[in-house]
Amino acid sequence: MSDQKTFSFYRLLPNGKYEFFVDASLLRSFTHCERYFYLKHVKNLRPKGYGTTMPFPMAIGSWWSEVMEMFYNFLRDKREIATQDITDFTVKAWYDCKLEACALAEPDKFKDFGDIAGAALMLNEYYNSQYLIDKNNWKVVAVEEGFGLKREVFLGESRNAVVYWVGKPDLVVVENDRLTPVDHKTVSRIDGLTITRYKPSTQMPGYVHSCEVIAQQLGYKVRVDRCVINICSRSRPSDNPRSGKKRPRFIRAYPNYSREEIEEWRRGVVTKCSRIATCLSTGEWNWMETSCDNFYNRPCDFKKLDSTTPSARDIILMADFIEEKPWVPYSIETKGDE
Image (tube, rainbow, N blue to C red):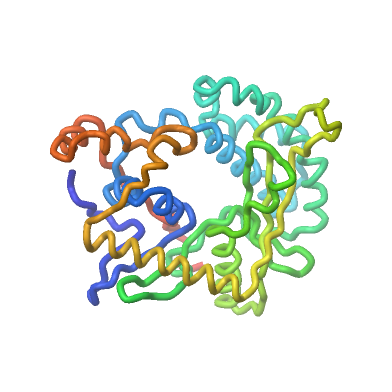
C-alpha cells in the first residue's frame, strides 16, 4: 500500500510538529482503538466490498439527521410543513440512506423500528409534539453548516501537536436570546438515564465552544454554554408496558458547560492529539483487544488483518483491502470566505 499523499486531518509542519484538524468522530475512533484508527484514517484502508449496508444504529441515525435537516430547513425558510411534505421527507431520506438494503440485512430491528410506514407516522408525531413548539420558540441560524476552512477553531498546542477543532452541528438556533447548537441523536430506547449520557462528552463541548468562538469572530458578543440534544428512540414504545407507563419516543437533553469544563475538554483534546502525533512519529499503534469483536455489535473491519502473522499481512492487504480517499473533516465550498 502506498503512503498517504492527500491531506486529510493532519500535516507535518516545518517545525516538526503535527497540525491536526479533528472532530469528535475522529477522536472517538482513536479512543476505540489506536490500530483501527491508523488503518482507517491514516492508511485510509477499507475492506473490499465495504459499505454495502451500515449497522442498524448508524443507518437510523443517518436517516434521523437527514429528516431533521429537512424539517428545520423549512423552519429557517419560514415555509409551512404539510402532511405530504412529511411523507416526502420520510421516503427521500429512507432511500438516500439506503435503508432498504439495511432492512433486508437486519429485518427484526427494522420491524421494531416501524419500517418506512412506521417512520412516516413517527415523523407526524414529532411534528405535532415537538416541531410546532420549536416553530414558536426557535430562530434557526444554521442547518448542517460545517466550520473549517478559515473557520476552524484553534484549541492549543503541545510539544508535538498544534490542534484545531472542526465540525458540523446539525442545527444552530436562538432560543430565549441564547445561541444554542443542536444535535440530533438516536438511542435504542428512552429510559431514565437517557438524558444523562451526553455529559461528559467529546462532541458537545466542541459545538458549544466553537459556536461561541465563531460568533465572537463575526462580531457578536455572546456566551454559549449549553446545547440541545434532540433524541429519538430507535424502537417503538410498547402501548401496553408492564410498568403501566408508556415510554416516550422523543426526548431532549440540555447539557450545560462551565468555562472550567470547556477548558478541561480543550486540554483533553490537545493531549489526545499529542498522543496521535507520537504514534505518527514512532509508527507504534496499540490495538484494543476488547474492541476486536464489538464495533457496533460487529467484529472490527480489520480483525482479519491483525489475526494473521505479521509476515502475511501484506498479502492480506493486497487481497482483501483497498485504499480509499482520506477522511476530510469539512467540505470545501466555493462561496468565498463566508
